[in-house]
Amino acid sequence: MIEIRAHGRGGQGAVTSARVLALAAVKQGKYGQASQTALGDRRGAPVMAFTRIDDKKIAHRGPILRPDYLIVLDPTLIHAIDLSADLKDSSMIVINSPKDLGFKHKTTYVDATSIAIKNLGRPIVNTSMLGAFAAATGLVSLNSVIEAFVELFGDKFSPEQVKMNCNTIEETYYEVR
Image (tube, rainbow, N blue to C red; front, side, top):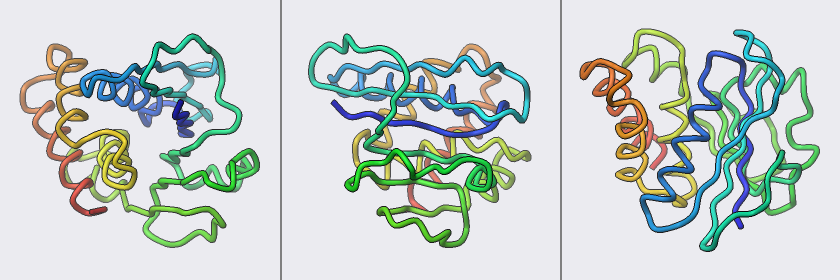
């Protein structure tokens, strides 16, 4: 089983990105599960979201304590939480940061905030980070992430908003590749 933990702040889309990743895995013939901590949904408060991906049904529920992958939507969290404390030696980090922050684990850095602002007009980085994660790990394809996003949000957002978010996913994917 592959376990992914995402750290962000309320309003950045960590929970949404966990849902999209789980559905993207399902679209590729795997099983996917998404959940979140019950820390409250206050904008700006630290939030953790979890995604599990496997080739067989996933029975385990609850938080992911030792993830295989860590997605960090807000780099300021490194000053509030020791993000790498619970990681396995083989864990990989995908972080929204234009510069190296000195993690000892294999880390992919991407300026997701700039890409989000350019495409969406605001610093909501979840779709940028979905593209970065897909490119950095190969666990889910670009197409499955876009299909999952459209399925989950195609009737909640305007067609223009859906297109802008899909462009953001794609641009970040190719930025990382």
